[in-house]
Image (cartoon, rainbow, N blue to C red; front, side, top):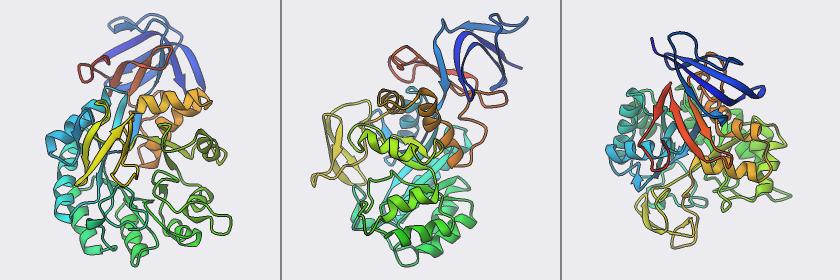
Length: 380
């Protein structure tokens, strides 16, 4: 039975920041109290008054650290480890539109990682998406909703397919949504040219997440509010890419106006995250990254070079209260995919945490009670 006490910490709990100690046993938080010293027989580590926040939960990420999650099983694992060094203690591996055979193979890699405890599962961003709003999804491999193809992918994921993004206006989409919901998969509305009513129908059928709200969607019009307002009116969690490129900060405030439980920070990162400008590949298409912005030759945004620590810090810089930004980076995405054992620093929760300096940069990361070290330069 392993025991550890983190002393002299400023702990961001669901009730606010508390000065004191975090007591951890067998990978879980057992107490947060005022005691400044470890109990007899416990290992103690002083955090020197630093802020401790819940580990980040990224439910939409395609790569990082030069590793594309769809390139190989090893590349998928390396991308997960890269983001872990930036505070992401829970990851969904997101797969872009590709031939079904390729997606089946990639889902098997994700299932292997999930069964090894490395990831929470997979997110299929396609192939059942709109040609009109495909963004950086490869249009050559988009499909009309197909229950047989979905069944193959579901089987390949071995119970670890957690999210699928669907354009609800496509013929057969509502039947596919019904099948996914029945299988326990969270359906997200995204890459869609749906009207307000078409998107609302998806939520009536059990969809309960919006994929990168505003991006890859029919924009709001005063006579046809489209999927953005349908998502907000449905009261579902809404993903946002807070990199200063995809969205204006006012958009975060608009989502938050519907409730602090609605905002979900994601990275949508590609392999360029942590590497820098250059030419990359996403779903068989070349992506140019310049000044941190990833775009296809057409100019369409193609994921991001964001990490969750940056998304969180930017939210705070944009005026989002610390407690709210933390919920958006941790508890909200965890709860959106049915994970109730993490995302908060409270007794009984998994000991996933990030130690931050005064600039909200990562100093140290703990996952399931174990320190993450040596996985990203500068983040130990």
